[in-house]
Image: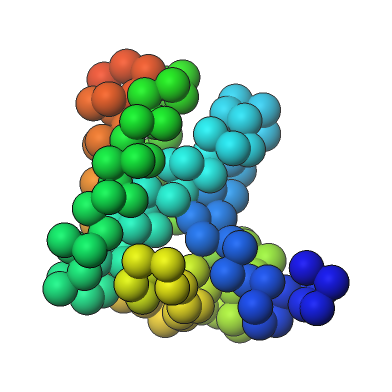
Length: 146
């Protein structure tokens, strides 16, 4: 952290899942989920986005999904609107100009920062993560998408 106080390089790697998590927190209103709970949901969305960007990663990233799933069972259910999350992510302070930046897994144990990700990939990853949250998290029907 001391080597990269402004989060321009190495420190950004600590933000795996945080772009989604901050969008989730902001869309719900702060305090509806703990920051760590939102980060767990964001981690799953980041893993989903990682393999959507490079489908060959699916098998290599399966253990991440399993681990996140075990933790996600303990997160209380909150209804999360995909469109509200997407709007909140557009306001993220870590975006690169107009493009939202994501930290994704390049391979297990190695991350990279990307921007300019196709919107449909982001939506698909977020919907998948929230569907899983709804099926194994606090209750059913995790998201609404208008």
